[in-house]
Length: 134
Image (cartoon, rainbow, N blue to C red):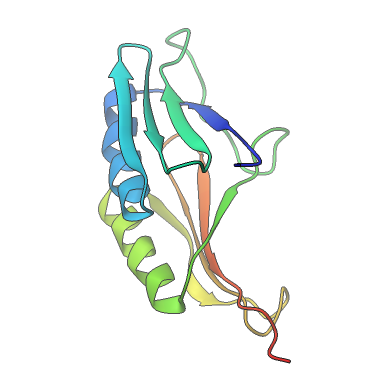
C-alpha cells in the first residue's frame, strides 16, 4: 500500500504542465491516467498517483522555493546513471536546472542527486542513496 495515495499540484497552464510532467513521469515508470479540462493524472501501480490541476483563476502566481508551502519531491532512483538520464529527460522537457547531477557529501558520501524545477516553481529531485555497505 502506498503511504501517500495521491499528490495534487496546481500549474498555471495545463497544456504546458502536461508537456513538462508527462516525459518525466513516464520516464519514472508512471502511466498516463486520465485527462479532462480540470486536470491530468499519472499512476504507478499502488504508488502515489500524481495529478496536475488547472488553476482556479488566471492570476495564479508560481511557487517560489523557500517560501511557505512546497519544498520539493524527491524520487529514489536505482543508480547514478539513472539520475543522469532522468535529469536529461526533465531538461529536455523544459525543466530548469537547479543543481546538476553530483554527489552531495553533506547528506552522505553516497548521495548522488540532481534538482530541477518546472515553470511553476515545482521542484523535483532525482536521488540515489544506496545503503552503507556492512
